[in-house]
Length: 161
Image 1 (cartoon, rainbow, N blue to C red):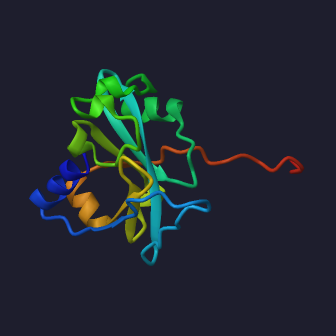
Image 2: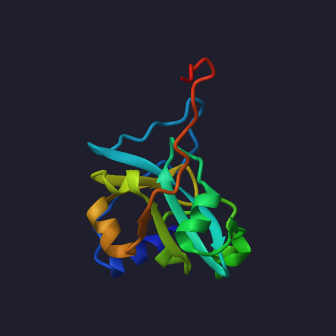
């Protein structure tokens, strides 16, 4: 599937850098060097109405608000299952890249990620990481940009008043 992803990027004239660590390293895992002002992102598959949508958020966030997504998209949103994707991606047992165009889904980008210089993401395994300038990503995917993550919560000892 890496070949499908690389072909997709090449066909669309997208500049990218791929870092691969084909042999698993003993713990601790190899750290990926991020481009300046870049952000590591992760993808989550949801189903909005009857359409698969890949939500791209900062990896440190991890919390997508399904109720907020339902309001933003104007349709019920449920956690996605890989069977909603076309072959060969419906059998995927690893990390989904944030490229909806590759897997036949719409792409939704969290607004916090849209203001970075580049995105980095693991594709299909933690050992293959891609870096793409955000401008190239926006040109390729034409994602809808929305506030889709939870804002966080108050510290346990916070005083209200």
